[in-house]
Amino acid sequence: MASIFTRIINGEIPCYKIAENEHFFAFLDINPLSEGHTLVVPKQETDYVFDLSDELYTGLHLFAKKIAAAIQKSITCKRIGTAIIGLEVPHAHIHLVPINDMGDLNFANSKLKLSTEEFLAIQKAIISNL
Image (cartoon, rainbow, N blue to C red; front, top):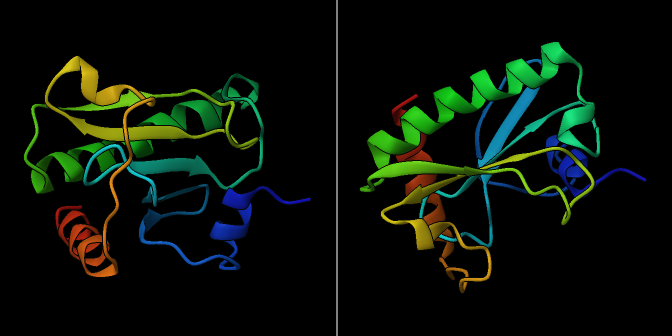
């Protein structure tokens, strides 16, 4: 059965897409730790990030770097924190999270509840800075 991320990539589940190319896809996390929290995934469904080929692993990080730069230009924050946890969805992914201090990257923190309009504004801002 396809992962939820594969279903998002295939357009079966709606998302706030930020960018995609032949191999990678980036979209806003719908349960964000902060505004601009984005997920970057390979289109190839692989459970564990370290099981990706060297080419896909490197490409994923280079794609994430471009997305992080656009988030940094769009959201007021000190840094874009990254996390690869890999337990919650069996599809390799990188979390890009705008942060101002170490505690902002704690996944035990309460998630933001954003409106559709807020998600669309964040999506538009990030895309405009790609």
